Amino acid sequence: MKAGEIYSKTMPFVWAKLLLGVATVVISAVLLGILIGIALLIGSDGAFVVMFIIWLISIGFVRFIIMHYFGYLIKAGHIAVICCAVTTGQVPDNQVVYGKNMVKERFAASNVFFAVDKLVAGAVKQIQKGIGKLGDALRFIPGMQYIAGLAQFFVELSLGYVDECCLGYTFYKKDQGAFKSAADGVVIYAQNWKVLLASAAKTMLMVISLLIAITLVLFILFGALLRAFDLPDLAVTGIALIISLLLALAIKSAFIDSFVLVRTMVAYMSVAPSTVITFDLYSKLSGISGKFRKLWEKGSQEQPVQQPMQQPAYAAAGGYGHVHTPDMVASPDTVADKPVFCGQCGAPNTHSGRFCQDCGSNMF
Image (tube, rainbow, N blue to C red; front, side, top):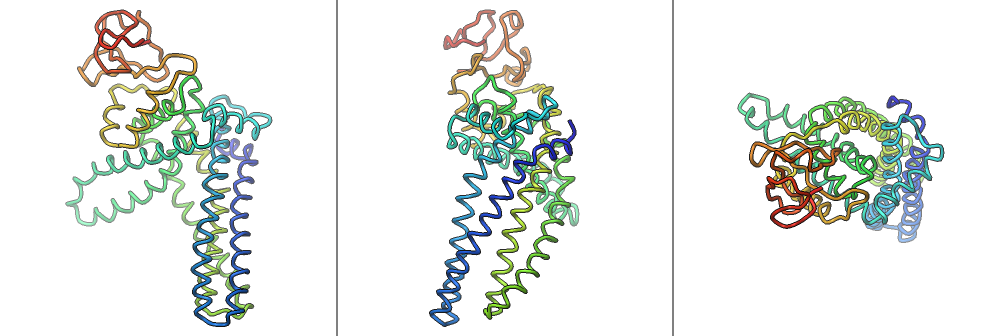
């Protein structure tokens, strides 16, 4: 199923995101009216400044509560449905109920999803910073620092969609705990970062251009409307700009971000199931990112959903060993003649038994 088709068939989530965004604008406008009324009663320019500052603080709090709680849950449901559409080629009949049930099934409670989401986002950003340092060797070229800075800007914008793809992998790997699957998703991103970021960056210029255009149009409209209230010019400019930006962000979050998310997830899930990790990226990424290390540690402590927990046995430590991917389940027959590494203690095991010869954990 192509990205455009998935986007059009998951519009209920797009409209829900728009509704939340508009709700923040409406609440902000109501608060603005109340505070302007108070300032008019006081009748001084200083009162307008004070009320404007109070309004800024208030709308920041309102946006945080609405978008970072209800918005998170809608985003999670949308990701679950997109993942289903990408991997099965079909959108569930009742996609809202399906998304809600999938979020409950994978994360049990909303605070678990928040924890996973924050760790994944932090890990992806830290890893990207580590990857970005590889380009420092070219800084001696005149003007390269500006090109690199612009490229990094686009990359950071793209990350907002890549970390959501890593979360989407948790819905694909239903046989593992949420933290473990999320850690695997980050590793898959690190393995394919060039392909994934190239796909996401293609739409960044469009996103920025549309956001600027929408904001300017709304700013002109709200500015003309507010001048009818005989407010100071500075207040008109500031209020019109902020409301316009809030509404533009709501439109961007609902329509533009959703479309980019679908495109990025299609690219991600096209490589995720077939990705073969040929070395121990888990330990390397843990060294780069403390967020990833915490994510992996939490995943290691989770109880398996259907099959036992294991750390993939990659060939980094000793340059040998049978390669396993997150999609492969090891068995004694596959490792009888090759050393593997225990998923609990990391010790190498040369025997063909099921249990670690160092700590006694079940390796399979």
